[in-house]
Image 1 (cartoon, rainbow, N blue to C red):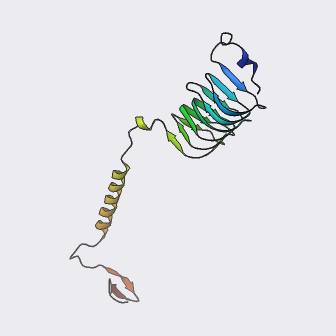
Image 2: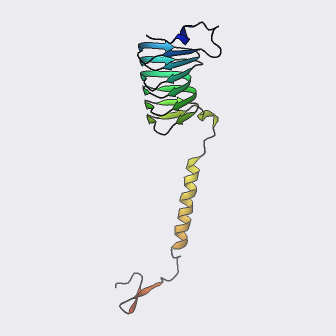
Image 3: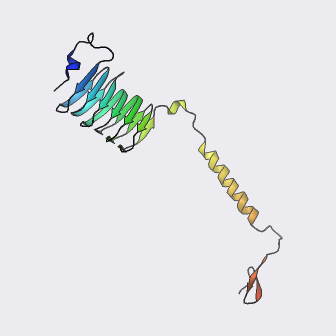
Length: 173
């Protein structure tokens, strides 16, 4: 497994957040846990977990895994489910085949997403009552139709003449 030199330095030498880079010639099977930022450019099969980290799946990456992280940015291919507590971004040539749950979801033009998505913000948003909306439309449609129909006791109106003589509604022509 190839890990960039940034990842091998001690945490005290690095200013800012810790960044781990798995290069394009890296292949890994199993569970990967991380803090800070993980940039994955190789192949990984298994599971990726982080409570507070940011996962960046590079253009050359192929991932067959379920992913749980704070923030996920996908540029490569992912086959598996993704849970991004804060944000999930599908950028450029991203290809995601699986279900996603995210605090926020951004899909850039050109990215492909095949699966279903669910917002983690759904509990915080008041859902409108769609049923009452359709009841109003149904009632409005019935009122409009009844205003066009002849009322009881109203005489049937004559239709324009056919062949020179008037034709009444309901009479044979």
